[in-house]
Length: 273
Image (cartoon, rainbow, N blue to C red):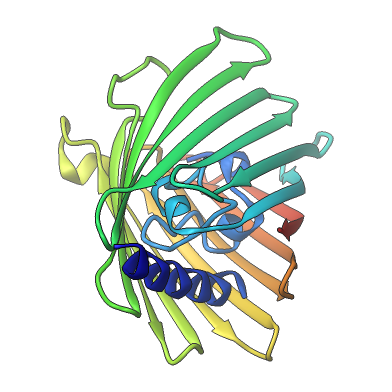
């Protein structure tokens, strides 16, 4: 079992380096902004507390992540800045991660834990604490799973806010990632609120990542959320070294009902140890 886990862990770390190469936009990392929030089925570490906590269990490393972002509205007004810190440690049988996000709208603190449950599968849980600038503090949990179907194909799913805390979105989202010859990664997400009409609450999106040079990766993505009536598109670049990853992204979010748009940009640095 230990040998098998080591093989799977080595594969997932390799796959994640390819990936890294590897809602509200301010809940997204720079990588998630470039993929329009798509990536439930991808194997990621820094994104664990924000996307799907389960894949964190496949790592045997630690990471520190810092991000600075900015949102620009079309209407007159000052740009809104956003800061995100994430600390992760998966050097053991249980992986853990903590994130802190702050902007003019308030603060968010997320805590995630994940553990392997089978040879190629993992389970994770995230506790979310939302503290809006003007409003009531809210807490909820997410439950995520991840499975490596083959060496190049992974699947994930996350159940968000199953306790249906008022003011927070409830959804089950599934996703997959396929990697072809260490050159291109394809990601697809699909989800809905199981208690309502599928056509009214559907969220779906796709993203693609290209390895353009030995250590430079280009990422593109687009998604649409019928429940929140939002459309999103993004683009980003990442430079990857064995220890440090530097990422840039730009994304557009459109309110489908009013046609109002906002532009988001962010810069991030991640250090692995």
